[in-house]
Length: 364
Image (cartoon, rainbow, N blue to C red; front, side, top):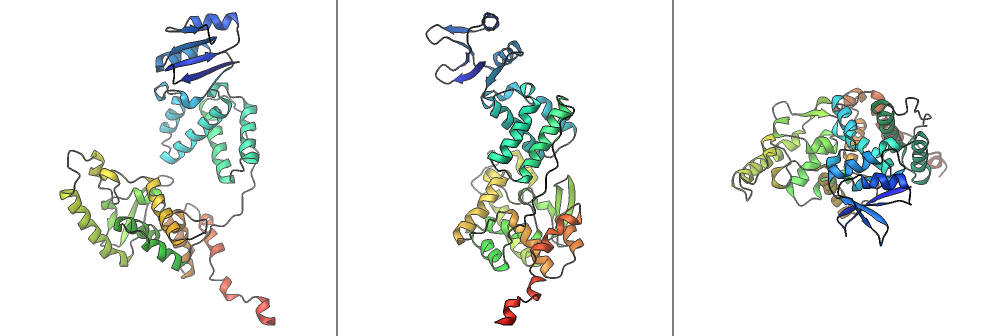
């Protein structure tokens, strides 16, 4: 077994292997190689070109390494990137697929072409039984492996997984009073408005940070959601009670943009997109930053429910249903492809449950 590592002390790649004449011959053929007689190791220059030569030279050997130490410029997963671009996959899907391919390569310390079918099954079992990942995570992992190893590389044309039983879990729903407290918790007016808009329109966190000023239609009281999940555009509600606050925020934002501390020379070109809730330097606010705003508010209030930024969207749908809004209309506002996805909110709505009396109340 050969093991390739990056050594910060030497600033070189180090190759360990037991003596074998053929492997020594291969190591000697690589430009810039050195042999350390004291440590009995081979070392090579730390640059992408040399790394590619090492991989090509030892292609048919059982070489192991940490894939996270490979320079990005080597483009180990260039075929995956190209296949996803050709199919116009969303950023989130691409990120998820990259994550799982990197994880299995890291786990076995191998390149994709070295991974075996049995190792794919072993890794999925490990994630299911040892790491106890959710069924949603397991499904996304399986989809990544099927797409890459079966479709892109055609490495395992017969790769398949047994059908999973879907978990029948319900989301924890915030009450109206809890939502109100969370929306008013941030001290920063921009953060407060971000949470309010997300709840009032039933937005995903990715949709909230992607909003532009031009997406707000004050006349029609609507918000345009551009290229949301599934590459679909849709319109959702702009709450009447938010219009005035939103107008004041836009006036303040315009003044900061014109007279604030960030000069025109310092601003990113992304400012031309006019993000409604810009981040540092008027660039796009990151999803993680938005999630952190919610988490900080939740912790500040001492809320112990397992809720996240996405729970504002759950609360929006559930509260609408409890008000008597038609399920099909909620489906349209949320942008669900199927009404079956929306029906989960009927299960967590308390409207029908509150009409039922416990038999204990009758005998007490």
